[in-house]
Length: 200
Image (cartoon, rainbow, N blue to C red; front, top):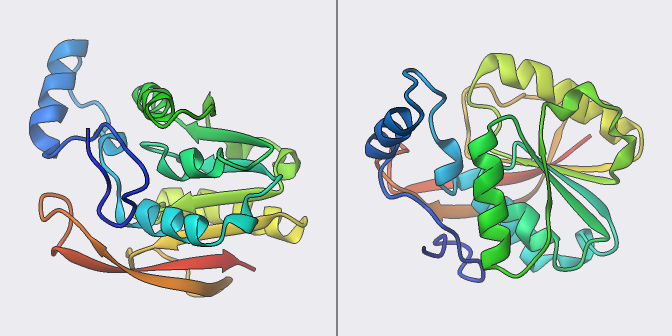
């Protein structure tokens, strides 16, 4: 249990190394080649997005919020402090368990959706956010157009990204920038410049 470096206001159950945890989960499930446990870490995009939400609490006030690809759930947890309702979505059931545990640790309630919500109409939410989703081209190609459609439909859509390879070059307006401490076990250095964008 620890606090993400940029967000001391939130407590999370987190791993310190990815490979041993990954191997332990495969052994526990008796399944090789499972998806990496991305949910066990607080990635730079999630930290930056959550810092922005903490510093601009009006953004979530009274909103119906979706935290897309929620991972450890940090942005959903902060949103739940003053939003009308918060859904945290992820396709990994273990992420869902992590979100539930982390929400309870922070004394908030979050609804967990274990599904690809980009198959849904975006109209259930008037604030949609996503941290660090552009690390693979197929995911970016699927998710970003959905986010743009949500923005065109009137939702506020926020993304945070530390300069991943597949970050779109258009359709984003920078609203904040943070230097995020990271782990060299996960990133190329100990600090990452991470931007928060509004999708336009």
